[in-house]
Length: 174
Image 1 (spheres, helix red, strand yellow):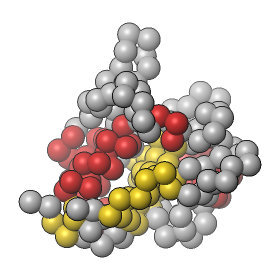
Image 2 (cartoon, one colour):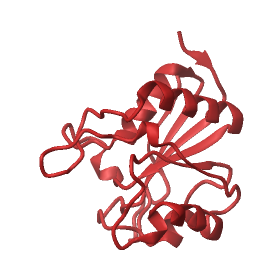
Image 3 (cartoon, helix red, strand yellow):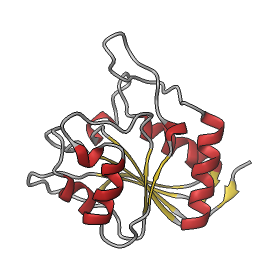
Image 4 (tube, rainbow, N blue to C red):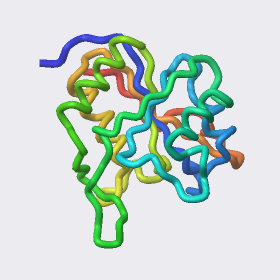
């Protein structure tokens, strides 16, 4: 049975929602909701040639560019380890530690009322049956677990887009 909560879970990817190219960190972090704690759900926070998306660089970037709440947490337990032979991650996700990860995310949502989970993927993967980003699965699972949870998938882009900053799916929990 889902418990009741009055929180918001945002999802974001640091790849452009239109071009699928890596976003400048000042744009990505600067576009995150002021009230939200930033939670990296990658199993390995590493991005070649992008120190602001790698390990301790994320904490520094949150402090430098994110408006409002400057809190950062790496929740490795919700990282997706399901890969093809080429190394590309695919669906359905296989989490590092599913039970612990979802329990920790639920606790964060109860404590902070607004959390943004992020990884590398753009929103372009939302409808892809093979390569749908695991953060969408995380959001779906939290929606099942927590009645009253509002979920907003953020579209962030560096190009002119009439949907900039808008959600592609806002689902009040159920």
